[in-house]
Length: 124
Image (cartoon, rainbow, N blue to C red; front, side, top):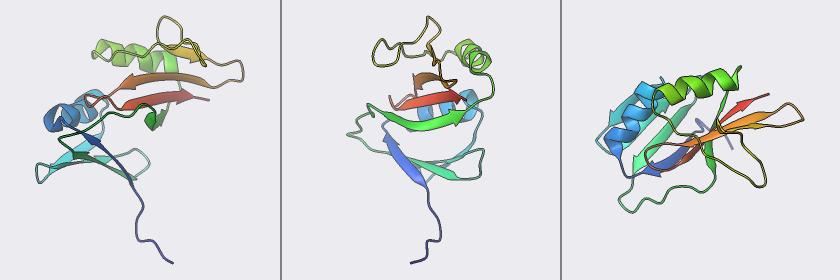
């Protein structure tokens, strides 16, 4: 078996808002295709496809992870652009900025895109 490409996809119900979020807030290269798909070009060169689904239901788990070098700085930057970070108590506790400071050296923060899909920032 030989694969020609592998990519991930998930849905949204808000085409323009989701496109603008990934392009303007997250600063990723994007394009709207046939008014039904958003092609997102991730930093590692892999594509992500977000498709419009009228009966979209947001994920209740993380669909996309961004590895960052300084999570506190990235959270501050995204907050200035209007991004709200999720607060968790269990099983991982977040601080008032929305960051989980794991004793093992992995620091995480979560936020949602306009479709309600959960995205994580990870600093190792």
